[in-house]
Length: 138
Image (tube, rainbow, N blue to C red; front, top):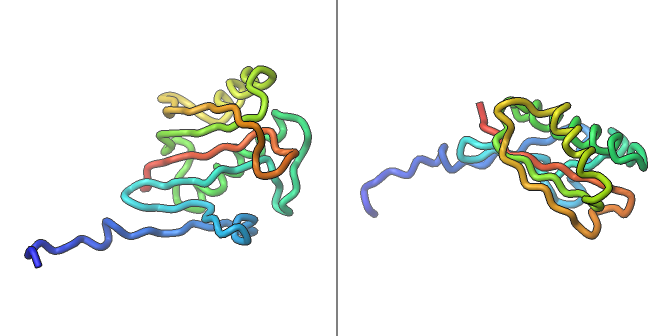
């Protein structure tokens, strides 16, 4: 034993869930709070019943960002606390301008760091966008 007491509270991992929690059957946490940060799992354009809201990219994107906002609120945070965003899209050429629109609608100065990736598919074939976030825990 080194004589240095381990601060277990600094290493605590706290799960955040929303109701309904459509991620539970997949063994995924909506968010994890650890080390002063909140890590929000990727959120898609699905409604409270787990249904994709529309084929339209902006409609899906607004719902995905709203879902991130809901998970942040359940964890005691908001978009003002977000330091990093990851956005995954299935067609960068078609939807880059829409992504910029969504950033402007949901994020504000100072804008968080961001990674934008085109992927060949998401968890469901009708999903066109998925958004994840990392935020400061209050």
